[in-house]
Image (cartoon, rainbow, N blue to C red; front, side):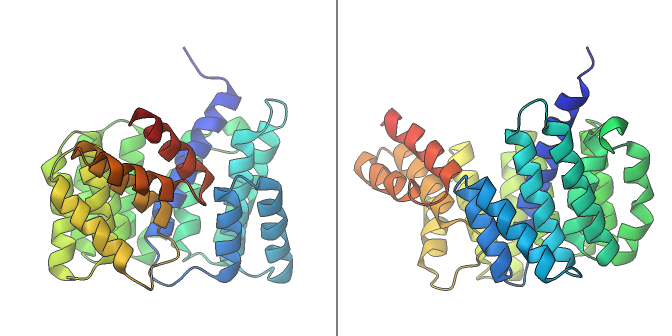
Amino acid sequence: MSLSPRLFVRSALFLALALGAHAAQAQTPPLPAAAVEVRDQMSAGELDRAIELAEAWTQREPQSSQAFVWLGRVYGRQALEASVFTKLSWAGKCREAWETAVRLDPANVDARFDLLGYYLQAPGVAGGGRDKAEATLPEIDAIHPSYGQLARGQMAAADQNLVAARSHFEAAVEADPASIRARTALANLHLREQRHAEARAVWQQALQLKADDIYAAYQLGRLAALTGEELEVGLQQLDQFLAVEDKPSDLSVEAAHWRRGQILAKLGRTDEARAALQLASAGDKQVAELAQADLKKL
């Protein structure tokens, strides 16, 4: 049974916003203050305020590609929350913002991959289409070979061709071993396929390249919470992440406390788990809801 255009749009936005989340984790430079403000309002569920901030940012800096990336993300989140009557309108604004971001800076990888996710999943009536996604590949290749492999992997994953996706993601990591974006894609695919040891190896290799890689520590803790394996090691990695004073603004402290609480619960350390989940319940609205649900299970 085929999906309606509105359901296709919802699927597209879920994928694109998920790619945006991975993109945020893949940024080496700190997020601009304006992006942090928009992200924090989105996390708190204050979408009207997030839209206001993002629109003001694009008005202040009309040539800022990154401003339009975040405008597209908040429009996309609004589309997910909108009524069936306005969903397509918000989705169109989301796509237009990302297309503007690409036009302003063709080398903006965040913009490229947010828009790619949209094109892959949205129907033509919503401005999507595989032909549009494929047309972007030469331009993504020109930025870096790793990104070209990553884009092809995401297209293969959208086609449910996971073998091809894995091959492309492995090639992306090989082309740029320091790429958090490529490692995130490969590790998440391994996790999707229940290849837990391989997923851990992706981040263990990152630690071999850089012993204090805070992203790798975070992801190893997350994997332990999700799989129930290597719990003590995962707990240690999350403790290491939380102990870092100058944390990257694009990694969620609340999410780290949530995953830590899940690990402690699996280890039978209920009181400590409860304390961690309570810490996770402050700040990020989405994480807080998940942490509260886990608290009720203790």
